[in-house]
Image 1 (cartoon, one colour):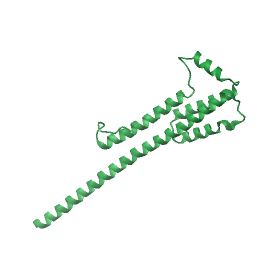
Image 2 (cartoon, rainbow, N blue to C red):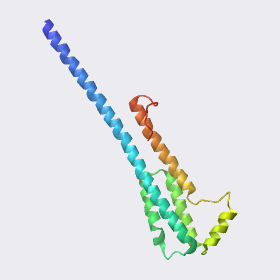
Image 3 (cartoon, helix red, strand yellow):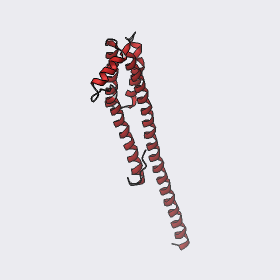
Image 4 (cartoon, one colour):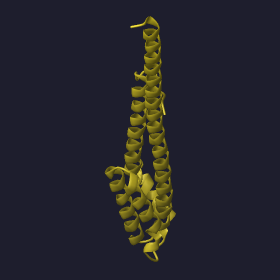
Length: 168
């Protein structure tokens, strides 16, 4: 075989292999970045949904303390938020959200109380005051940390080491 043809063929094959490896590396990097970015966006969306639920539930619990419910529409916003959670959240988070809704319904069904009743209850339970949103908040935190850890693991996998992975 002629050395010029061999040289040209070797150059073409080298360029082809180099181009393909660059393309593959770029494709894998872009795919990993997209996945990590998607996980972060999902976590941000869930966090906003959970914050919305906490604000609505706290308002409903405060209202229920001194008012009776006129109708089921007082919990419609909570039901709506729980239904949206079912689309993306873990079963643990949804279960805790449903427990909060049940607590709100029970609070509306209880006799009306005054702020002084709340103060006395808080003083009596100073060390063990029951936050009706605590379990829900803890379930949300655990889920958001799991999503964050998944995103960090994805980034670490892409970089080849967990040491240089960014904290999200």
